[in-house]
Length: 212
Image (cartoon, rainbow, N blue to C red):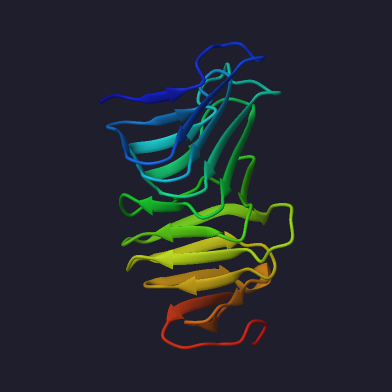
């Protein structure tokens, strides 16, 4: 019950860390990453649920020079929103095979004011939602030689502001809409169609990467 808070020491030289490898972690309210100081939360497996939001850099005491990092490397994180708090430190979300699942219809699933949202490996970003959700954050590619991927699960619609050039988008169910300017490409099992200034990815057909 209540909140789960990682990073409460109030000392800019300290670092708190939580790693979830299996099992279930649930908070009835928020999961705070870096409320006061440096913090890392890594999900490698299992299921983590924050029934309100996941908030990085929550407190004003989370200052410049401090970093809050959320690594989604496996398992499933279920929440309403990944948000940035009132702190001025650096806030980072990394995807490499973990699933972000939406608890409900949410205009913003990943806050655009986070310092960075990255696809850091070939296992990519996985979004599971039966609702209409959006990611206004600019998603970038991490270092290394790999093709970034976005996989959409669940029956809902997903709108993404920006993906790394060359991203392969796979839609298991529902649909994904991205601006044509972002340079994403279609992966097997998806159909990319032009709709105004957007590409719409839906289940059912295949279009070769780079086709127009």
